[in-house]
Length: 143
Image (tube, rainbow, N blue to C red; front, side, top):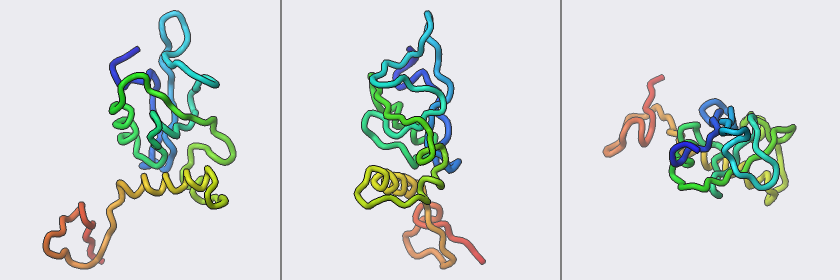
């Protein structure tokens, strides 16, 4: 195993690419196998990462996803799914689908939107008001 917060797996994708975070290469341990202890099916490269120790990471940037992973001490538990027709790497595809209100997929879409807005700064063409900080409160643009 590597340093604390090291999964032994590369994390790829992220909201800045319009993608769910997903697993890249898995590091091999001496004697074969990966460093991950699993319940259920073993994770594999390409699996979509939904949660880290119960914290939703869908809609986060790659950097923010890695920060969530580093925040936790071992053991680090991942919730992943195999990519398919509904959930694959493409966030836009998933967000464009319609699900019944209250369903697991509908709730996941809301989590993604909430996480996306964490890094969103609105733009405006108006002049800054007293106390507003460019790049924090708004991106002030001219037309």
